[in-house]
Image (cartoon, rainbow, N blue to C red; front, side, top):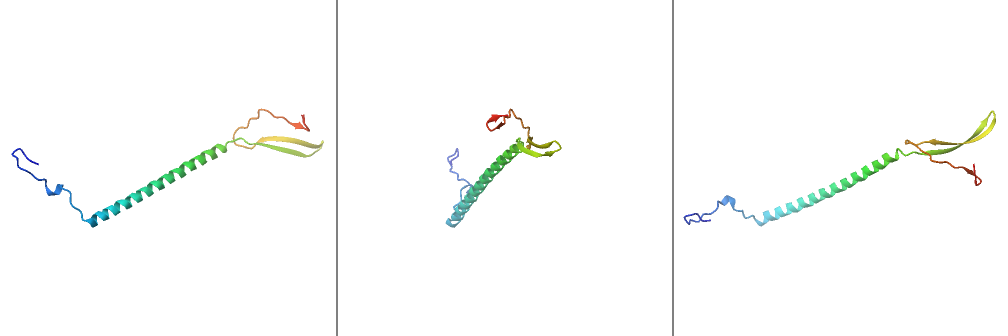
Length: 113
């Protein structure tokens, strides 16, 4: 650098880059390689944990939806009473949600009853 008078000035020694020994440079390169490997391993583990959390939340969502499905149970009942023997069909809602039947058709030997 030169000033207005034409004198050449040098920057202070503390601002110029220092020359590192080859051994120090090798140590620094080794450290940065290991830091990169550890950083990449951390990113990989984080991505695996994120995938597992998303899968778990989807499973919980499906399980919650399945818990409110209506389940219609069909049962046959037969027995004896004072009037004689009887046979009956029974439909009950065994699920948590509302069960709506739009229609019911029963056939015996191909004939609708």
